[in-house]
Image (cartoon, rainbow, N blue to C red):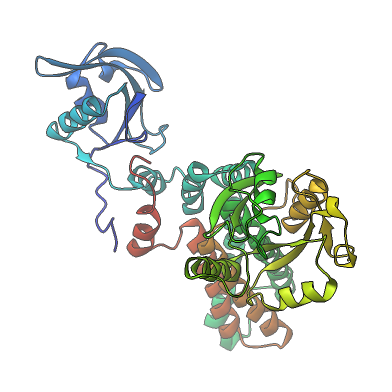
Length: 455
């Protein structure tokens, strides 16, 4: 459902910008043409209409003769505000009652409550940022690790937007020249150099290929790695979870089947979030409750990106390990074998090249395990190597890549200008979807309605 069918930039909007609940400070954000004038009517202090942009003023907010709060009011004038409009932020005490009363007063005075993401939508509509940058605002807010924060900040500051737009403009120029040739087909006049076009399309094609390849890493950066710790009962799965987290998160005992449901925790390695899921031990003949836990274990494994399969190195043979692994459900995950309890004496099953020997109880071998986790998310990233984290961008890049593949084939096979122009226009369209040159109300509604209110 589109939340912005008729966005009216003449409205002045307001919303709570800080999380709901009691805190020391609560901030109310306001944007629109009447922002400063309306707040000035309610503010006992300096005349805000005479205040310079990016200044902060102490005073009181009053509802008639009733004092609501002593506040700090920040003034931001267009076009240098976040939204590109006149904007005000009111910093109140964090009382839920006070914040609600101030919002009610603002609405009675001529404002309306903002919809989710409407402040960032206005920044996009007022050309303060393109669509890819606007989406990155939500990623910055949601960042849970250093890598996610760095990638989101890079995209919010322009990321691949400027590069894509420059290349898109060059494609538009070539498309125009080819279409001009079609108008003069009878004169057999050539306006577009096929050699230069081939070089440009090859350059863009290679860039898109790099961006598409980065998406797997980008998805990990943004959403974390769903990682299941699996194995037979008493293999030491919960002890491993506690060792990785450096806390007693899971109950550990020598009674088989202690863990009967999945336990989920987050764990950061080299800036990447791993979403650890400790599961019930896989075995036959379990009671009803444990069987439900094992069923959930299988479901978690099927959805995982990485499975740490833990086995007891002190009493597991290679044949037994092979039988255990044969019981695992199929899925698009990477399997990492972890031979636990090496302090009790290891067996041949713990000595394979693809096995990481550890003692989770004594934290032996943990460095090797952490290195394996880092290698799983390794990506050759440099300051010039951009990363795609947004699924919408990935789909548009993929469609543009396919269209440019058709262009290269058409040039090599000497196809007509009509086919060349058609495929170039497709690539231009899909690149424009990323940065927002091509938009629909439905697209904007879908993107910005997922933002929090006040952003």
